Each structure stands twice: as C-alpha cells, then as structure tokens.
Amino acid sequence: MNLPDSKELLDVIHLCLKGNRKAEERLFKMVYPLAISIVRRYTQSLTEAQSVVNEGMLKVFTQLANYAPEWSFGGWVRRILVHSAIDHIRRTKRFEDRHEDYSEIEPTSTFDEGVLDRISAEEILALVQKLSPAYRSVFLLYAVEGYNHREIAEELGISEGTSKSNYAKAKIKMQQAMAKINTIRRQQHG
Picture 1 (tube, rainbow, N blue to C red):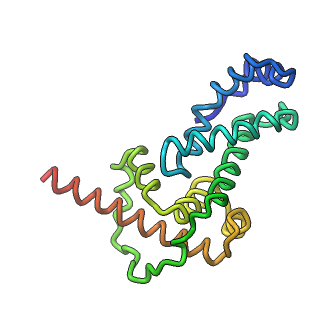
Picture 2 (cartoon, rainbow, N blue to C red):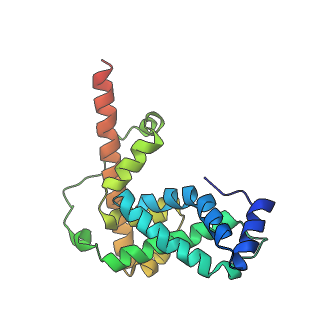
Picture 3 (cartoon, helix red, strand yellow):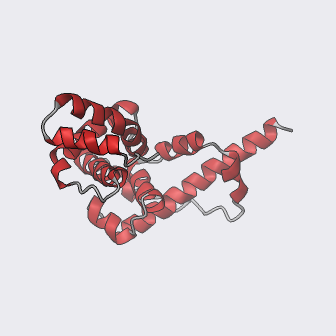
C-alpha cells in the first residue's frame, strides 16, 4: 500500500506547512491506511499500533518542512514510521527473551515452500505477530524493510550476532507455524 504522489497530496502538504488544521486532518486520513499497515507488523495489538502511528505522524508533521516533492512521500513516511516503531520497541525494552535457549529448535529441512502460496497475507501477518517482539522486529526489518544485520543491530541496540540469531530463530518459528497450518489444511481436505 503506497500513497500516490499526486497534485492533491502536494497541495495538502503545502497547506499543512502553512498551519492549516483541516489540511493536517486530511493528510492524516490520507496517510493512516499506509501508516497502520506498516506499524501493525511491529506491534502486538491494534491499540499499540495506533499509539505508535500517532507518535509517527507527529514526527511526520514536525518534519514536513524537510520533505522534498521530488521524493516519494509514501517512502518518506514509511521511513519515519519504521523508525517510530523501532523507537517504541527500544522504549518498551521488551527484549527479555532474546537470550532464551532455543537450541532444541532445528530448522525444518523438509519445509514446503509452496505453503506460502496457500496462506493468505492476513495469516502470515498473524504468524509474524505471534513472534516475540525481539524476533518480530528483526524479522520484519530484515525480511520486509531490507535492513542488513549491522543496521538492525545499530537501530535496536543489540549485537549483529544477536540480530542474525534472532532472524534465524524467527525464520524457523515461521517455517514451523506455516508447516503446521499446511498439515492442518491437508488433514481437513482429506
């Protein structure tokens, strides 16, 4: 989901820069679907996501004068919201299980890659949200946002090794959950 970089959007941004409250409300409504879809991946609940979106949108409005029309507004907003989600994760300090021993988890070498074709985006999002906050944030930053492990380590205040480990463990948990869904579906369809 992206925002169109349209004349209407640029007009609304221009009015926002002049302090027009109606334009600010309009911009918020234009950006909200994109914002909530980005932030929802990083949070446990819709309420938590809405709180992070509000924080992120405050940053969008306070930094709006730094936006250049030749940039993709959706990409610019995405960056701010991802950083807001990261800030939220840091603030809540919910990394208590990053040192948990998961040595008993073995990668599933027989993972059916086709299972991804049979699982909806909503189901995948639900599986991602079941990951611990530490695993979820690393998984999303690496697999979805395209950060490398060095960048993730810097953003989250963890070591690069912890980032790699959390990503590998998240991937294993996702594979196991998707394989379980696939097994259940095969059993239901005989």
